[in-house]
Image 1 (spheres, rainbow, N blue to C red):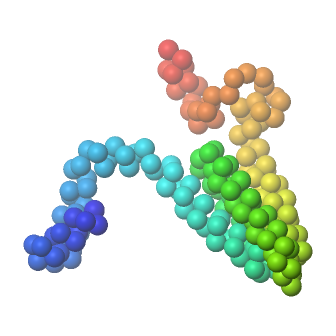
Image 2 (image 1 turned 30 degrees about the horizontal axis):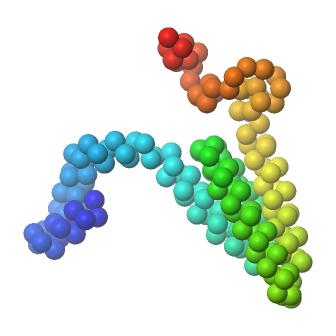
Length: 168
């Protein structure tokens, strides 16, 4: 859409409002863009939470306030609620936090040990918030021990009618 907007503005000398309408029309009529936007919409939200969590993790290491640890925990939980594969992104953030704290200790920085404590504290708070946020889903699908059956990823989203249609 950005390329179409630039084409309309620069090459055809169209005003910005008309160029935006033309770019939106070309984007809406492109079946490839529509198809891939449907495929990627869940991951777009995950990406937003991941980028915001990276910024919060950076603040965790630099600022002693607990609010950044809670922000990291909340962003992580929201990312996990949007797409379960956000767990890999969370792992990478905490590996980065621990590596950064270890590097600070190795370089004998002034507050190196407090950075390690902040990283571990952020991990503890994040784990607690994520368990609380995901507990209803875990109980429903049986991971918490109430049911022992195969986990279906759509089980907590679809109605019983939808599940029966899938089983056909």
